[in-house]
Image (cartoon, rainbow, N blue to C red; front, top):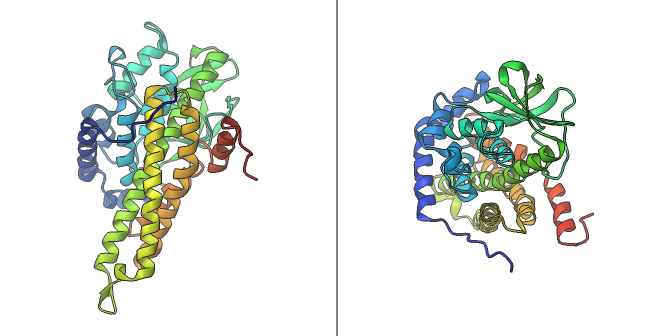
Length: 359
């Protein structure tokens, strides 16, 4: 029997959204980011502990018996929607989703993965899977030296390093982290050269665990892209209502109405795709990989179009460094390549659905 996804938000998910949005408004508004991104330390002070342990967002994917909240990918998707809206610098996707899902695939009651997982769920530690941020779920990657373009490496307490002989946990103190300049200054990248560390799994188990972590990351990245696109449209509508030309709001001009209406239709599709991916991951649906690929193939483009329209329809102010539109555009462009490009996911769709691949 095919899986019927539930695309609606529950009362619990709405309450979680309100809590996360309130926290981000207080501690990580766009002006806070604009003031910090050039300092090389974009993470707002105190934000991650408040999000991870204060709200309990870090442990949403972790069962209660392992120290987590016992929620699901649906709730984690709501958190990522809000983080996307605010273009928030926080290691949520990398630690609370990708690294956490990787460890969940390895967990036994008394194994080293379980102990580390409990620390991640409590917010006590932050982990990052040491692969380039462009690595897609179906892409095999094993570190044999320094790894480039690792996202949120500067925020990590421990690195999960996939090597030919298995997966290792390496404390940050035993790794060399060299920051690089990314396009998206709100999601720092670095070159990571990790030490030996503690073995967590053998090669076959490690490959399956890494694939599971990257699949969850790709599926929930669509929710981040959705939140970003929603903010771009809302901000553009607000601006065009307030900006006057020829004694009329510019938003009343038919050409601009059409552009925003088309973008709204794109957002409706993106919301359906992102929610379907989160629900498929939450329920362990047989078609989860296909649903994730559909969400990524679609949502990445919608986020970029929304950010581009936000910049353009703000006119001159949209081109300035002082307006947060450029933060959204850079995040959207960087996310286009994160965890697999749209082209890669289209190829996955073609393979899983037995369709001709795009030229």
